[in-house]
Length: 391
Ligand code: ADP
Ligand code: MG
Image (cartoon, rainbow, N blue to C red; front, side, top):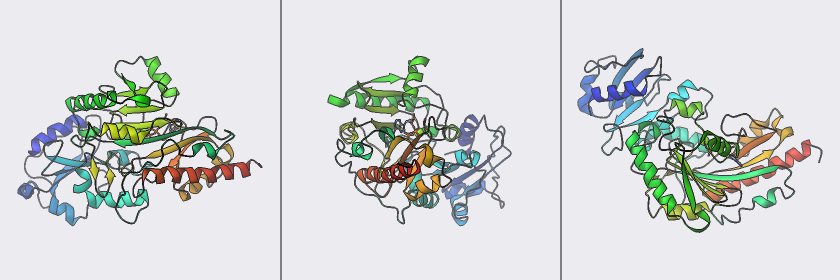
């Protein structure tokens, strides 16, 4: 690892950022010489265009400071023995949170290793988000995926418009989006699509590259809630959209009940729409070809700490105009461990009183438990909406 290489890479990455402080942490004691008394580097000081300040500190200094994050920090880098990306460095990627103070989490991991290297920073965030006292996870269990009981939730179809369950998976031997280069992204697309193309029966489908899709086809898939977009400011500020749309795409079966996003926020997002797409079967088949990043205590690892564990977000699109207008709507959802999003996803507006309601916790419970947490919460939501409508 050389400081100069890091600087070169950073200056490419941050060319659109105006003012920022870069904190580089390293555990390599030989790099102590890089620090002066104030923690500023005295040797190999790199030039960062557009930066107002930057400094290097060693691991020991970093530990002494108990991982206190400078709210302006752009990157925290840490060399590890086994690393996937970036000249022997693993890192946290906090600018998404620094630039967008309304975020629920505000920090991302640069690669699977970061969850171990930066556990002092990440574990409190993870415990807080997933509402767990201890960092531990259970074995995967999707239950009877063909019989999740969503149908009984709203038999008349008055409230629930549609249902969706998604999980994320990361390739164990690649970094997360901000740190993969174009070549690695291309390799990931290839191995992902090869595995997807081997699926059979109900899951058999076709891969559509975002590069070759027409704008009309893309828009139709977005309008139908199948396709991802590149307009999330958190992901943008965490460099997820580098080289967009190259080597991104979507796979789906003939009736679009099973979808898989390739190289969006996570390397893979496997999605079941309505009552189709047996995710457990899809994952089992894909695991014959691919190795996914997994941690004993954290479950399946994802770019965002809010997603790891089961990585499962089970949602309904639901019409709840009365309840959504109540001042305690958010609090009501929080109490039920539910999260509310807009009609077109995270931070979008709601259209026609339709909200995306999903389970919030993903760690420390099984997939079926996460799905049932959503189901139980939605029962409460419907009960209250009915009462408000005088039904
Ligand atoms: P995630 O990142 O968790 O997969 P997003 O919030 O980014 O989900 O939303 C992705 C897309 O999935 C959006 O178009 C959203 O409208 C759609 N979506 C989410 N839940 C449902 C649902 N229950 N029915 C139909 N579409 C849904
Ligand atoms: Mg998303």
